[in-house]
Length: 245
Ligand code: DC
Image (cartoon, rainbow, N blue to C red; front, top):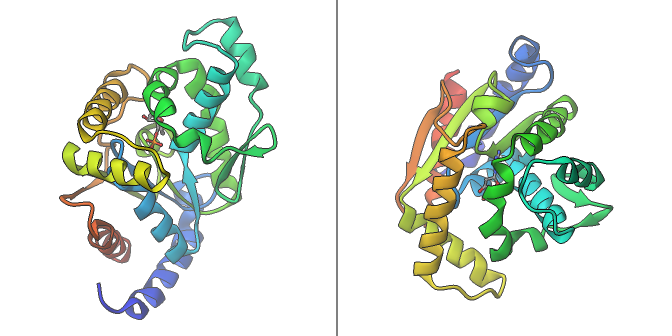
């Protein structure tokens, strides 16, 4: 969309309106949720939207990845028992300026490895982990207005969100995006291998019993067909939806 200035004023007004009415929708700030499968481009859209609205960005995938990183480093397998319960309490997770901090350290780099990609769904499927993390996520909305992305934002964590988006894309588009991300970090991977991993992660995220990936009730569904400039189309759609509300 060409002229950003046209959008800024109405969005600011929209934001003020959202904030004024927020107590009717949610206990705290205004929340916009973006759910969808791996590699759909949620974080790109969410970051741009948050910057434009002056909201905080909450990357809940990063929270699940950090817990997975913490537990796997302690050699705690993804099985619900007292060992996991205690280890979970021992993972001191904080969110500061949109970054997840583990035991006082920024682990943003380590949590995006292929190793974590492979194991994160097994840990995220555990109700013990999900119920532990739900409060950490909701607390963020007490502190600020949020654009939150993940798998269960609009269905479980923020069911009363002001606006819910479900972002999808074909698995080949998602695999290509993921490969570019890994390449940018100097990690080599075969496209076929990534396709397989994404399919497997989708299956686990969709089929788990607790908070599976689904299109939350009341969501607007957006599909991107290519990784190129796809965020502009989706962002445009989200802005229109906000203005229409
Ligand atoms: O968005 P991501 O690829 O960084 O998420 C990593 C994993 O975390 C994903 O495969 C499933 C899990 N996850 C989840 O179960 N619920 C969320 N709200 C966010 C992520």
